[in-house]
Length: 77
Image (cartoon, rainbow, N blue to C red; front, side, top):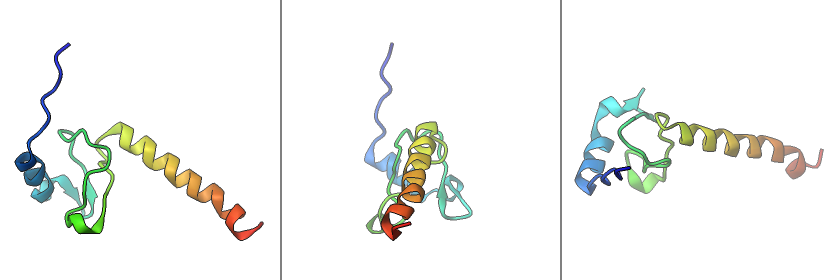
């Protein structure tokens, strides 16, 4: 089994700046990018989810459900 080559920093930056990889300008969708949490368009704003990666969607759903189920604990209900 051959290991895939890791994309260069130039390639990652090119993907991030490509408007075709952003749905409605805010949802990152790039099947070539295997990262689960790539940086946002403006990296100083944090990270986003690569919705083209099935692992990312699973992680996103788990985090979302943890937040929803923690609300009753936080608010004491």
